[in-house]
Length: 278
Image (cartoon, rainbow, N blue to C red; front, top):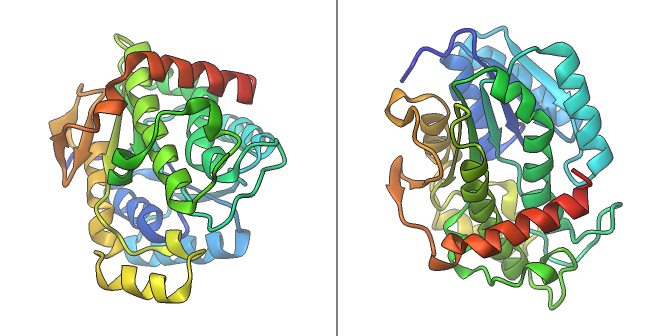
């Protein structure tokens, strides 16, 4: 693993699960880690834990509600005021929501948090990433993307909502977004890759019934193992210059056929621009 001293890394959803383990792993490698969390108390508790376990002093906390575009813009502006570089952006935060709900921006919440937040955070910080090359964008997707249905017009409204359907669609959006982003960043020195972390038992499933949560826990790996591929893509010299790929278990894999639909990726980008005003 490469020396990450002097690197500045952002990890969204860093107070729990894979995000916290990714932030810890990067802190242990010497990076300045900016944890992006929604809840200040939980964020501070995770920050203290990472300080203790890594002996790293450059672990910062920034508060952002990723369901709110206004909050995302405030976060991006605040980050730029505090930092003049960004080497690694790990878009990690995600949700599985039992019932359909809409954000303050009028967008179905799973799609807003799991995809549009990735899109908006990335685009607002792209100038810094380009200034800091070689830099990396790491998008945490999921093998669930293979069950996503290409109906981009319906994703933002959550019509015919089901928890797994909305989650799968949002994870397909992560892969489509990554591939389109990589195409648009070609030649800039900024790479973009996505990953399946493995079947990880995390708080992601806290909205599901308790018996299902217990079942998932029995069949899944821990967040520490789940974070390995994120950390690998964030700083391993083995993936230097590699872009527009999907990884699982720190190895390149072929994603679903639907994820290679270039026209769908372009359409998703346009819809995302319209919904975020980027």
